[in-house]
Length: 128
Image (tube, rainbow, N blue to C red):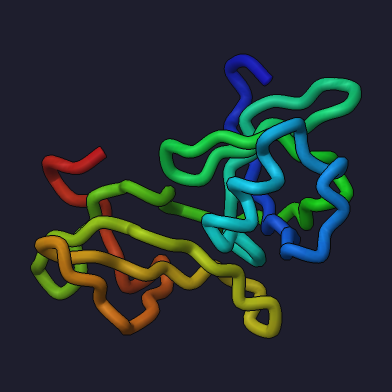
């Protein structure tokens, strides 16, 4: 999808998924990372596979494992500011009832337990 904005989707992947729904070698990594219901970026599509990205990790899955969503402002690894303090997005989970992404942050190597909405965050001045 050259020059097109990357689309977002919720990955529906558990240990019970048929491993052939992911490219060879990717199924084990998806389970190990625990990416069920995580928001991922769709970076490319071919006839058989849809390439997805979660932070720096890349995988190929079949389209039926994805639920397309919109309104995702930040990516895993993005530097953000919340309440005047810089943090990094460590996880994004889709809240189906609210139809919105919930962002989980890390600050100075420590995981913050609170979930944030996009309206709570701004892109850090020196961030990505």
